[in-house]
Length: 391
Image (cartoon, rainbow, N blue to C red; front, side, top):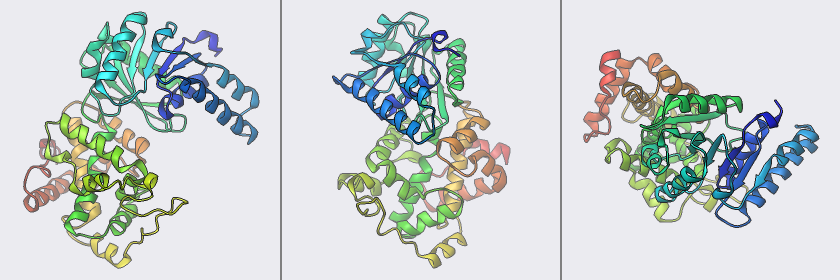
């Protein structure tokens, strides 16, 4: 389709996420208008995108004419008020509710009433953002995953006021961009960041409890088909980033013990041990990014995998992942197919947690959680009521 037939797309925030979204929309043929609060940031982002596309063309991965055309569709503008009338405006600014609310208030005044207004937030409530905009019925979440050009998944998040036509139009739009859309209500963490919390938290707790060293626990999870263990993955994400998302989910769920941040991770962040980016996290990193001390105890791995649920990293983690996913579906916040698709595409899990629950047996998962709840009272391991009904 000629790009003249497609409406303009506005992207606010020219960091890695915003510029990636701009590239996705431009690749699909839209004229894209990119702006950022920092002077010159949008121009620098457009130049980086153009250079990356040119490099891909030089490597034979993209026709040179196409690379140039994509780059030419991205136009930097000075501010949100300078955006033309758009089909959709997607903001990817800092995770700050006040800043996002102020931006949506401005967009509500400056964009036509038919423009879809979307936030790329990973942890803030759509219901808290939408009221700032005129016509909040057209506000929703479009949560892309980093890097947007490579990652297929987009969470399409409905707020309490989002109307069905807007939800359908936004879903169709991101699908036309070559993405896989999953739908979710505006629940803390949405699908991926909500369901994934136990993957990180259980590993951290097992280190605290002395079940095994981090490298051995990571090796156990890799043996189950996960591409990375949870401790090395949080080092890659950034301990501070992962803690911030987890803390946001915890606060938005009235500090439910399921999501309570661990002293282990809090201690890492307080010490400045943020992971690969600081050369020290759970592990210590050489200049090339290799962890010098990620060496598992193979005998201990075999021992743990043969143990009961309290000390078996795989059984314990899967029980919690299945419980979280089942609970999300039971609350009507997402469908089981969308949950499994989100977790396989968004996090690279070898299986979706609902499918995994069927394989393990929901009754077995319930029994494992009851055993964990007896060993660690306090509510973290309470089984979802849905497990009783489906087991």
